[in-house]
Image (tube, rainbow, N blue to C red):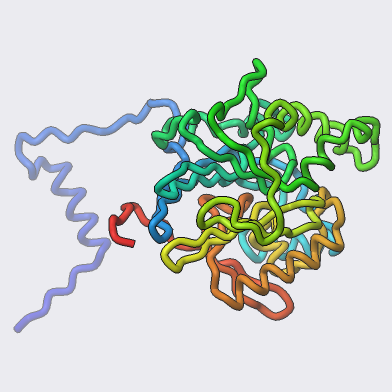
Length: 336
């Protein structure tokens, strides 16, 4: 048997000759000329998955753009921050954090965890998407029964009130630690200039938290304040920061809020300090303790500021940790 060897170049040349010599008879070959403008929008940012007998939907309020990462994470030379970002193929400028907001359908209640930036543009024009992504996901803000706040910072509670003074979630009960409510609504802090963010943060918290004080429930460490949802006090980032453990049908998910802001920097080096922590050392101690617990027990987490949609696991790696994102599933399966 004779084996005929044809090179890729010969095939391409032959094809070109065939086309140019009219080998396809009367077939008219058209040349495409794409002149459409480039699109700027992605698909709506919502993602669903089952958690035991509950169903979770993550919606985005849009990314925060924070500039130079080395200015936000303290305790390591800029060269070390640069190397960690470079080694993980992450940009060195225009540092970005996502805002992954969880809506939990428990079967009896619709529970929203944190509310994003609202109409504020102090971190750029890419935030304030929560209401539109809720609509895209088919969730009416009027159907939210409970709004649970990890803490009282701008990117977590400034989506509570509309600019006209009405509540974006008019039928909801609100849950927060008393320590955080008291700290961030304290009028005496409006005159503080150190740290520089204090005045604007307190003013925003007062604008959004005080009008719904009569619908506010203060939650305590270890309390199961809604069925299957337990509070865990994790101070440091703020005085009353909370992580929430959601359990259904034997499965647990940790909603970690701002326990750690970054999937690389504060995992590999969990004792780095974040510039906006109320008590940076306490924040680092809390971070190490809770991440170690999640890693040891193989409990999945939802990181508010992690790359979309923010679900994954954490494992021990040397003196730090490594984050493993959970692959997204394009179908929501009926069996859990």
